[in-house]
Length: 242
Length: 218
Ligand SMILES: Nc1ncnc2c1ncn2[C@@H]1O[C@H](COP(=O)(O)OP(=O)(O)OP(=O)(O)O)[C@@H](O)[C@H]1O
Ligand SMILES: [Mg+2]
Image (cartoon, rainbow over all chains, first blue to last red):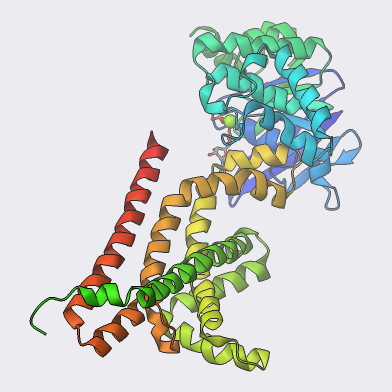
């Protein structure tokens, strides 16, 4: 479904990504991890073309994200994305946050969009808060709204960039639970996270990045049981022991 | 002279009120027009489309390097030439103010747009909204919310600047006051009164701005 083929990317002279290759099959969950600054966010933003790449290509289903003529807005409307800092629209209510894309991009009627918004928001247990503004919600609630906003577009795949790392510890699980449920429903997911419990539970594969390269790309049990590279061993021992 | 005679104000109130109305209308319309045109210029500058960005930047820099009074003169003489017929002092002054203020507003609005977090744009892009939809529904509403105090402040400055329209023989509040002052020989009364009126209006405006700022940080 998502196929990343030998991509390289530079910010000016600085090479952020070097020859990265991986793929996410339909219904698969792939977790991306690695030290800070290793290029995880950059990699995931390349998948829906928020960041351009200079070499290599990325295919989503059969559309080439990196090709010149590709209709990126259309492609993006089919891939959901969830950000570290939620990025809900602060001047709109929860309901409006969920309806904007549906009405303006998918051209759904107001009733249709509202029905979808209400259904998704009740699924994450926030229906009583649907008329509130993001600033009135806790971080965990906001992130659940953000996930629902992405789902409202009926995406074929979901991208997550450290969805729980800005949350207070006691709110992490309410968000992870939603994500686990999504994975179990068969959603195709690419998730940048350091939540190794989540990875063990639902990931099919783990991609480990360091200094802009994909250092390991292996089945989850293999990755945790026996990471090949020293850098991944280091990383795992640090993250699991703290 | 000598004695302070306030009845001169009372006797000429209708005439002065007409002048004030002209000043207020000019300010209001120029603020609205300036913000609309300024938003357009700001969007052009930030669009990443080179010819548009350069044209807008050139315009802003040109206008900002000439005095307002010159712009008012330009449009007074140029607009009738361009249209082939006179349009009168009010409209030429209005156009001049809109064109002039737009350059200043566009810089304020550009800063306002840039103050909206990049992640907000990413969020809009990620749901498939187009560039213009993102500006319209996501960025500009937040940018304006942050900018209202500065926009109002700029409006207060504009209100004071409207006193320059005497150069195209418009009778704004300042001009009306001078006329009364001279014809009635009551310079002290009239100029103190004019100062009080300007002060009251501008002070009320800045109190309003302070309240907005407080509401924002609360
Ligand atoms: N717009 C940019 N311009 C220049 N350099 C950038 C830009 N964005 C990111 N970088 C650099 O690229 C590298 C990779 O950044 P990226 O955000 O992808 O890392 P990350 O793995 O997501 O890190 P973190 O765990 O801190 O989120 C970093 O060294 C960062 O400083
Ligand atoms: Mg990151």
